[in-house]
Image (cartoon, rainbow over all chains, first blue to last red; front, top):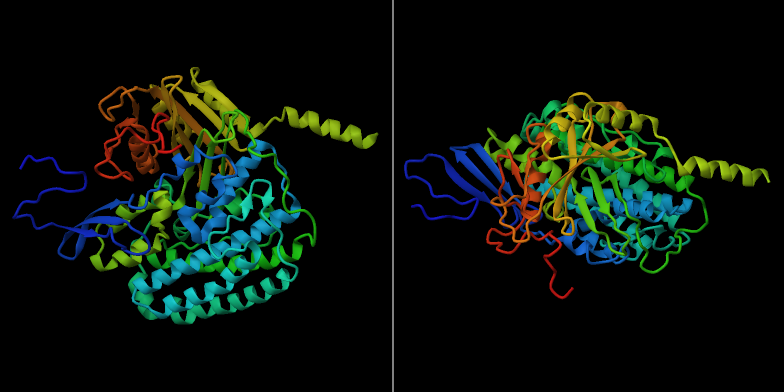
Length: 377
Length: 180
């Protein structure tokens, strides 16, 4: 019995009433991830998340590629939110190379980032719905996000992996009639979003399953360093777009959504409220955007960063997404660290699930706005 | 002429900008601890290099007196030429509205061994788990990716890598990707 087993596995005694249950690694939801639970009857007594099934070594790969060829693979951890994961990278490289982004490009970036945030959130909401057995809430968001994917397709030429942001601006300008089409589709999208309240958020079945489930107190949310919707659902008013505005967010009219409850319901409601806010941001940005002008500054091939380091962060669909770039006068980064919100929020999972009913696993797990592929990088 | 003058003034301001608030934060650290090195003070960013023996004291001071309350990121950086591995904690604050833009990078270095035995060699650092509980998973990642063992972290286990990973920690510079 003294045989050495790999970490995460252990032999149990026969009279042990605690049962170990593996949830995953085959799809407990969106991507491959395992949750090792110990249950006593119906109650979870211990939870050990085991990510890493989709680890692709993005940080190592980045050390072998120059600042421009790093763009397409860096968006792979979260292809539904690809603009937001490239955002801090571009801001960081711009600081390293001393680039000033043209005004029109800044607005185009904000529009693309907000459209992408909605596309991601709709996908997440669809999965959240289906995991609670609400198939309408799967169909509607997955259908409605096509509206915005269409817009991003017009902007960037690709449906999901856009590679639209480049250091020094955006890859290309938008087609001539884009503003009108965008305004029309975003207005319709907003109308659809409001209908979600009737079918989902005001639904007594959803409320009874998620209210007072997995409550994360304000103190714990801060102590565990959670971010994004998880943090704001626990009553902490912290949105990077407001607190440390980048590009033109300072000039746009929007507000941060904060709820005090800290339960699963609040965590599922914040991203929906954020999407409504995104619609406002997009409309405002379309209005304030310069009607013409350059969208990208020309770079020399294989630009070299100085002998320094930068840390930039943006508010992605899941929370604060930071990039730490160490440069040593070479065309490739010496070290690139991606600090992703999914990984940061993962620490809250064992904390929330301990003592919960097993049946409350899906509403708690999905309310964390967790994206396994992003967490693994 | 006047426009040329104004650009010149702007330039001279840019070349040596003084960030009062950031400076006051870094001064309070260097006043309390004489051995720390303030690597840079930029807009909203400060970097402090400390010796590993002092890191818990400095981190506690940063938490209790300066009110940074969570870690945004923990990054390990390999420096084979110096025979050292650096660990950088990026700390932020949710509770103090004055600090919401600030990121404080707290960096320390440990020895690097050419033939690593993660956990059983001299690449060890004291864990900041007790000061900032939010670092626990980040430190676990750093342990498997660079082989730095964190004394005091209750959970120095594999996190992202396969359970049967037998090679050296992959984020070390001497671990090469095939074909590159």
